[in-house]
Image (cartoon, rainbow, N blue to C red; front, side):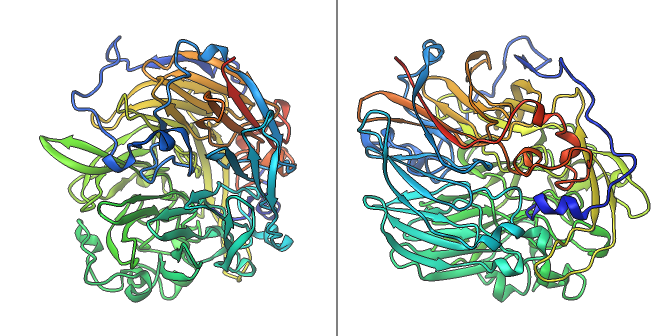
Length: 622
C-alpha cells in the first residue's frame, strides 16, 4: 500500500455496514506472555548471529548511529550497555527539539561525531544539532523546498523515513522525488538528482542506503498506478548508475545471465510481462519504498517490492511478477541474482517491502548466510541470501487469507474462502492491508540472537470495485474496512527466535505498534506506541522496565549513541501520523470508516488519546 490515503478516503464511498471499533479496555497488557508450551522461554541451541561486517569494531563506530538500521545488515543493535536492564528505570529527558511540522514523524535520528541529523516530514527540512553544547542547539538546517503539489499524491501522510551518513555527507530523499547529498559539516548542498515524477503519482518517502560507492533509492506510489523501480546513484556525483524496474521485460528489470533464482516459477523469459494481462505491467506497482540491506562480502543489495496494482486482483490474473517479493542484485551493476515472491498474485495489499535483516545461522548442520523477513502476509521468512532458497516460513499473526507456505515450491497457499470478490464483502480477512507488520522495522540482538518485532493485529472486510487507470490519480479498485484482530488489541510487540521459528514472548498493545525497535547490549529493547508512550522492556523476558509519555503518538525509529559527554543517549521522534495515524494527522472524519483506505474504521478512538506533534526527545541517565 503506497498511495494518497489522506485523500483517497474521500474518494471511497461510505458503506452502510461500516463497523465501529469495539471497546477493549483490557485488550492491551504491558505484561508479556510467553510460549504456552512451556513456563520457561525456550530458544534454539544454535543462535542466529550478526554477520562480521555488521559487528562494529572501533570505539567510534560503536558510539555512533550513521544510518537508520545502524549497519547495512539492518540489525538496529548497539553494543552500548551503559543503559541496562537494571538502571533504565532512571532515564530522564536530556533535550528536546521541535521539527516545526506536525505530521507523521517516521525518521530515525542519526548521530556522527558530535552532531545529530534528523529529517522532518514534508517539507523535508534536514536539521543538524550540536551535541557538544547544552541542550543540543541547532547547528544548521537545509531546506530542500520540495514542490507543494507532491503532497496531493503522497501516501500515508507526508512522511520521510530518514537519512544516511557516509564519508562526510548526509543523503536523503524528498517527497517530490529528489535524492540530495549535503555536506555534513556545513549543510551546503553537494548534489541534487531528480529521480521521480510526482505528476505521475510517484513520490519518495524511503530512507536511502549507501552500498559501497552507491546510494540506493526507490519510489512510492503503488496506488497511483506507477511502475516500481530501484536505482543506484554514484555517491560522489549523484549520477544514476543503474535503474531496475519491478515489472516489464527482462532488459528493463535487469534480468540477464547472472539471474539464477532458486525456484522454477521464476525461470523464464520476460515473466514481468507474461504474468500480467496485456500492458497492465506498465502501471503494475511493485514500488520500492521500504528498506534496503547490503552484504559487502557478496556485494549484493536486497530490497522488497510492493503490491501489484490495482488492489482489484480479479482484473489482473497471473503471478504479477516481480511484485510483492524480494530482489537480490549486484550493487555495482544492478543485475538481478535471485528473486523470491512472498505473495504471488497478491490480493490483500501485502507489500514485500519490510526489512530484510542479514544474519548468519547454522541450518540443519550447515552454516548459512541468511536473511530474515517478517512479511505483511503474516509469515516470518528465513531465506539463504546467497541463493534465494527458502528455509522456513512461520506464522506470527492470526492468518485467514492463506493456509501456509509450501517450502518445496516456495508458494503461498491461499485460502479460497477469503479471496476478495466484487460481488460482496468478504469478511474477516486476516491480516488486513497493513499486514501483520508494515514498514516499522524490527531489531536483531547480536547478544541474544533474537528478533524484536513491532507489529499489528488487524483484520478486514473487503470488496473489489471497478477501476480504470488515469495517470496521476488513485488506482485501487477496492472498498476496505479494517478492524481489530482476535483479542481486540490492535498491536503487539514480540521476541522471536529466527532459527527455531517461534515466538518467545509478546506484549499486547491497544493500537498498532507503528514505531521501529532498538535493542542494546544492555539487554534493553525500546519501542513506542501510538498513544505516545516510549517504552523499555527486558530483551530476555519482555518485562516492562520504564516508560515515558511524550506529547504525541510515536511512529518513529529509536536510536542510541555515546555523546561527547561520554554518556549513552537514546532518542525518538514523537508525532503521530502515517497511514495508521491518518485520522489524526489528516483530520479525517471518523464517521467514514472507509477513509484512509479503511484504516479509519480501526482507529476511530485514536483522536481521543493523542494529537498532532513533531518533537525529538533525547534521554540519558542522571
